[in-house]
Length: 93
Image: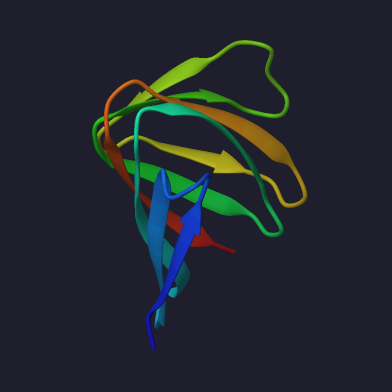
């Protein structure tokens, strides 16, 4: 079964799925700045658009474009800025 999620007053939306590759979400972000927390390791790939990301161990923001992936450890917080509407795939370990 697919589950839908909404965050930040509907400005981030995702659909969750489980298959042979594990648990994932496919989502979209509206323009804005967000802080997320992890409960497991997350592999986040930009599908369309661009994200500026501030990982927990970094003080600087780094740009990720379509097809680029960043990884966040479990039980961490990270910042994301979307300067245009952006789509992503997040795979959980």
